[in-house]
Length: 512
Image (tube, rainbow, N blue to C red):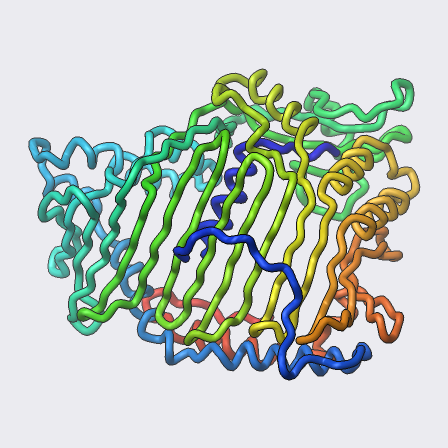
C-alpha cells in the first residue's frame, strides 16, 4: 500500500525531534567511528558481544541514580496534581473583562476549556480543538498565583514578556515557573484532516490488486454491506475492525474504515527564542532554552538545551532545501550517555512547494501525489555513540534507492504466497540500501544489523549478523532473559525506584 508523504508529516517528525531534546550553533556532524582506550582490538564472537553489551548496559544504568532526581520527580508530580485539580475558570474571573490582558487571555482560556471538556467526552479528536484558534505563546503571558485555601489559580497582574506561575511546594517553599518568549515570531500554517469521530457514518475503502487492469487500486469506496462481507472473510489475526485484510473470491483486500472529515487550517506563532525555568526555594531545577528559525519553503533550524536536575540534553537540527544536519546528546553529571549525529545530502522535502493553500480535499490529494512523486530522501550517514564511543552504531542509507524500491513493492501484488515474496523484496531493498555496523571502541566492525524474513509468519524482522561467527540471529532470539537476565533485572529495579517516588499520582510497577 502507498505510504503518503505530506508536509504535515514532515513537520511533525521534525518538531518531535526538536522538542525531544540544547542551544548551540548548528555544525556539520561527525559520523566517523570514535576510538577509546578500552576499545576491542579483535573481532568478538557472539557470546563475547553479549558479555560486552551486558557490561556497557550496567555502565549506563549506573549513571542514573534515583536520589539525584528524586526532588525534581516528587516536585513535578506534586505540581502536576495542583494544575490538574484546580478551577481554571477562576483565572478568567480574577483577570476581569476590563483588564488589559483579558483580550489576549480569551483565546487561551477558551481553548483550555475545550481541551478539558473534549478530553473527557472524546479524547480521540484532539485536533478538532487545537486547530480552532491561532496559537501564540504571548496569549499565555501574565502572572499567576495558586491559593491553597481556595484551590484556585488567580491572575495577579499583566506581564508583557513572560508567563510566571507562583505556588508552594509540598514543604511550603515557593516554586516559580517562568516562560519567556523573545525575538521574531514565525508563523507556521498547515492544513489537516479533522475527523468527526462522533459521527454514526463511516467511510469504507479497499486497496487491492486488479488482475484485469494489472495495477494496484487504492482507496476505492464500498458500501457497508460489502464491507461486512469482507469482514466475514478476513484472514488476519488482529481484532481491529477498522483496518484488516480479507481474502474473498481469490482476491486479497486491504480494508479501511474511517470517519467523515473536513479540511481545517492550523496556525501557530513561534518565537525565535523560548526559555522555561523552574525554581524551588530559589534553587533552579529545570532550565529549557530553545531557538527557532522557520521558513517552511526554505529552512527549518531548531536548537536547544534542556536540563532536568543533573540530566542535560542538547540538540541542533538544520533542514534546508537540499540537506539535513543534526546532533543530539544526553549527559548525566557531565558524562555522555549517548550521542546521535545525522549528515544528509539530497533531502528535498522543503523544496516540494505545497503553495501554502491546502484548503480542499482536492488540494490535499494533489499535494500528497506531488510529494510522493517528487520526494528524494537523499543519502544519509549517521552515528550513534554510547558512553563516549565505548559502543557505536554507524549507518549509511541510500534513501533515494530505498524509497523508490519500496514504492515499487507497494505498487505490486506480492501476497498470493502468504507474503513471503513481499517480505523477501523488502529485506533485499533494506539490506542493499541501509548498512548499520556495530563497533566497540575501535574501528573494527563487529556486527551488522540487518533485516531477515521470519520463516514462521513471513514477516520482516530485525536481526544481528556476527562477523566473527558468520551467524545471523533475530532480535527476539538474541535479546533474551537468558542472555541479559541481570541487565533486565537491573533495568526493572531502576524503573521501579523512580515509580516509588510518585505520591500524588499512584503508578503501578512496570515489568519489562
